[in-house]
Image (tube, rainbow, N blue to C red):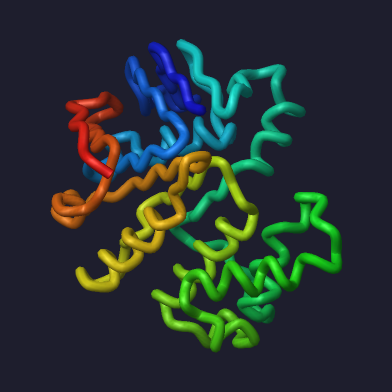
Amino acid sequence: MVEAKGVFLKYPDGTIALKDINLQVIPGDIIYITGPSGSGKTSLLKLLMGVEYPTEGNISVLGQPIAKGQESGIRRLRTALGPVFQEFRLIKGRTALENVMLGMRFLNVPKGQLKDIAKDAIKSVGLESKELSLVENLSWGECQRIAIARAVARKPALILADEPTGNLDKDNALNILELLTSFKDKSTAVIITTHATHLIEEKRFTKHIQMNRGIIDFERLGVT
């Protein structure tokens, strides 16, 4: 599903964001990536989404190499990913339902099925009563759930969540982590970045990766 070998990422300003990253993800994995701000967590997710290309080394996602010259394949790859961004990227002036439907607009889903799939996704995050609410009228935590619904409505093979627990209290943060990991199945993997290491100590996971200054400090195996 994901195979990274000896991956380095250097930005144009000279910043080395990732150093000698080796990573393997298989279907059904739940992987937490922790570390302080600037440790390379978000840079790694950008590589997995094909937003950035490795400076050295090789990485492939769902069999698609992430490299220059592979742009058309990477565009196809993104239809199989379910990203959950830190800033949500919800469109104001649109309802929760419309935002989830817009997240599927490049997936070749028949128009007659879009609304039903979006409704099911919103129900899966417990917000069916809010599907016709404008997103600017939702709480921060509700917007987070709609962003997750938008990702899972795509029926992705790989869910990528970047700091989904930011700005949430402990109980709500744990609920979001539990929600995200509930979408893991035998054909879907979930990768979650967070700086809140204390939140995952009792959570189910396949692997916990601690990053610092662009390198993997340690990997700890868990039980799902």
